[in-house]
Length: 188
Image 1: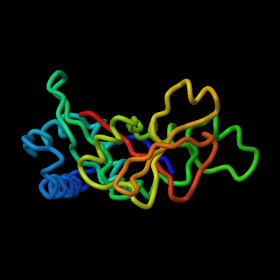
Image 2: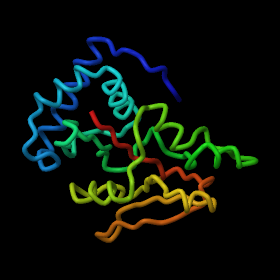
Image 3: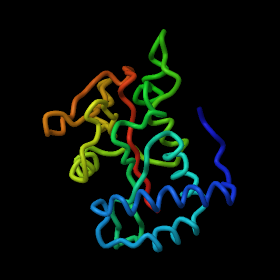
């Protein structure tokens, strides 16, 4: 289900900032040396990014700060839900894959949903970095941003964490499963 990009009410903003601050403080290993006050100030100054982060939260991503890009002065958020975000599962990879299905089409695609939310799918490199911060996708899997060479041949990549290892696999881009969603990133 898509929502129009819009302003969050003061109550929504206050509630979200509380949720994010609590998560930030509980998971300091994800963002050593970063202060919450700076993150909140950056978010308050950027309504569009705040809305995108709200969408990450609304769809079950549990976004959190995972880094700071000194060159751009931006904070980096990833979906940090233990399993692939529940509100983004059972989707194929992209709209081309969605249109190629003749029957039993999923409701949406990962690429389309991410674009509508204003976020990017994690790359394989970002996914491996996320796994250094905890154990994610031990029962689910997540679509990853697929290299164009693979996508041109009809495939897409996804990953999960099993047996203490990150596994990256391939599938037809038109496939979808109840336990596969996607994780996103956002810079603010």
